[in-house]
Length: 72
Image (tube, rainbow, N blue to C red):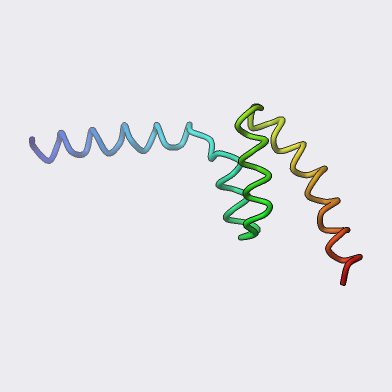
């Protein structure tokens, strides 16, 4: 394999990764670092598309935040 081949492969991989969307569960983990939210997102994403999972998580998990604040 030559340097030119490696450059071609790296360019192709870069283009591919630009087109791939990050799974919603990974986004939840990265932004909240809350195991409960990741669990809820994982369960929901097993049965729905990421767009639907995102809407459901926003709705369900905002209620979770309110309940957590109310308990304290």
